[in-house]
Image 1: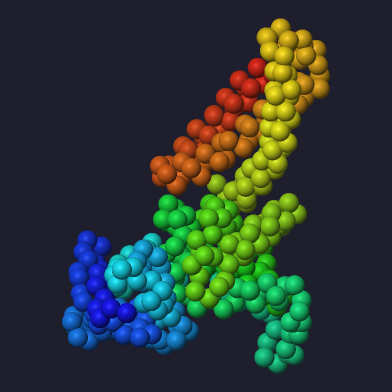
Image 2: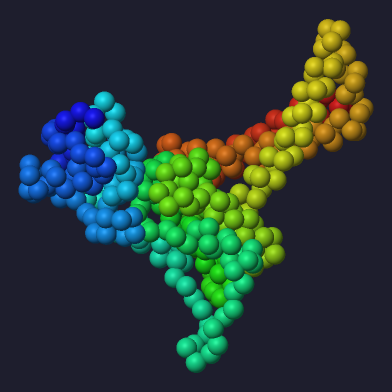
Length: 238
Length: 112
């Protein structure tokens, strides 16, 4: 292991530029450690986001050497090329400043995709029993651990080409609700995720699936939505 | 265009793709088989003239192309040229009619 990392960090807004820093190399160092070092010792006004540092909150995602990653769980050893790192804000989102992207559109799309659970039972009724081994529950399990980091959204070329596209995370969320036997949004949610802005725009490039730090496959959920919308359309329910 | 209409277009494109997969295989296999001993216009016409089966096959092929290609181009035009809205859909409808018209004319020409 060499003594120093050469790090280029995006500074400024959309028209900003990369700035070079030298950061001491440490054992088990994460990319977030590198950014934090720069902010504490070299560039006090460097803007970046983080909270939990353990891969739960989804706030520290950035573009590292060209690929979107959660920086708190990404070890420098795994991503540095010739002891060089290039760190930029997430793609497909407006840059606020430095490494901070504006996540509003990302989360607004969750709402547009019908991402809110709509049940019918009240607290005075019995809990719904959902067999853990049922197919629907297994489908939910496969997608439910999303932490909303935006890595899939930043990795999706369809979002780049088609800014209206709801994106992998919002559609994955919708799929977990379509598979939730307690949910009653039904055809309304399927209509929200159908069409040119929804699941039908997915080209199955699978960048979201390749990059998701939680190992979720939004592509599989989007395929499920396509099938569900097709069935609803053919039955005249849409 | 409504979400439902967009979903119907997606279904139409997938269904026409399934038809095309079969048609292309039959078409290519026939071409490879037919050119074994050299191929002339007279030979082709000898097979297709008066053959209701070949007319039905190529008519199906042409209709599948006329459905499939414009829907695929619809996404390409949106993503690469940012052309969307009614003008794009009307232009693609015209393309669909053009493909169907010229294709069916050709299929009919080798039949009659």
